[in-house]
Image (cartoon, rainbow, N blue to C red; front, side):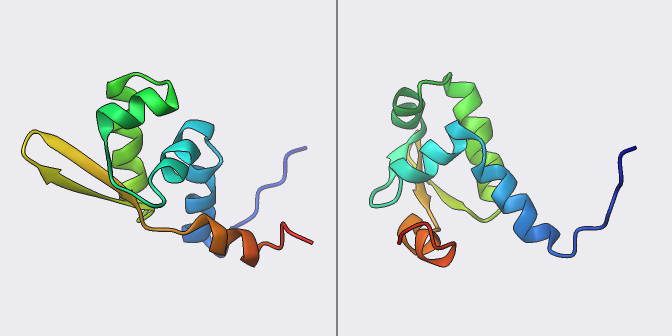
Length: 93
């Protein structure tokens, strides 16, 4: 029997759910220290441009990245610092 329960921190859960996708996580990693356009991100993440663009839109809706339009390019920058997240969830000894 499957038991359903209410999640009290749905916003946090939704953000963690986004980060649990390897390709989306790679986008966050790649844009920690610099802005990259979606073409570069799709190559780094080894996913199609359209899929990368969709992932960036989803990450932006969750507040995990910011997108800036410059000419014909859309630049992406992470809004979260993974080093800080690492400290919070105590992954290091």
